[in-house]
Image (cartoon, rainbow, N blue to C red; front, side, top):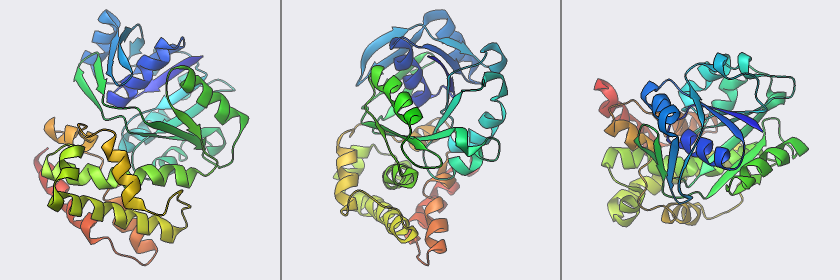
Length: 305
């Protein structure tokens, strides 16, 4: 299968490396020129829970170099989805499938402004703890699960076919018929660890081991869980804290991407994660004071970025 990965940051690089190692023709597309140059010169190294491999991946900053693809994966941050969707035309043929994988809420709504939802799959990656070690070198602490579903809902042959491509490349991948469940079960984990770990500058495990820090973090997660339930999300569990704790225990040394952004002096996607909880809570008649506070602190940290 010919696959384009738009957004070859830490997660996009893990996708590209393993999918290429699985026998697919993979193109990594990103604006980070040093990363593109390193991949073209030396290959893409992916190290961590999946092993340690260096694979040949095609890399470019220009979608016009790539040609039509069978699968297009949008792996940008949430605020980059719209621009990525707008750049897709050179990659499309009549049967191209688009899979968008982001943290937080709102990616589906952004991409549907540019493309028909009938051609879009929604993905959520959980438990990877990915980071860039250097241009051309990605690392990941774990690789728990990639959830995939139709944007319009329902299980289809297309979803199963795409999931099998990822499974053949070594990913644990599951098809979902309920896209809201797919998104929200990862979202409450993002909310728990992203903002709090960034404010307190700690790993997932350090947060969980600190009684005061965990009280704040799980408070954020439980506010999101309550808002999701009130909105009608059909969670597959009742004990949200146990679910979130089990998620975190599988990658204690991971730094959320939001913390990595801060360490690099970049603004984060706080608005799509902790910042989205008060918005949804208000829609269903609830409040989310912990997420309001954490979001405010992150915005304060980022004021000079």
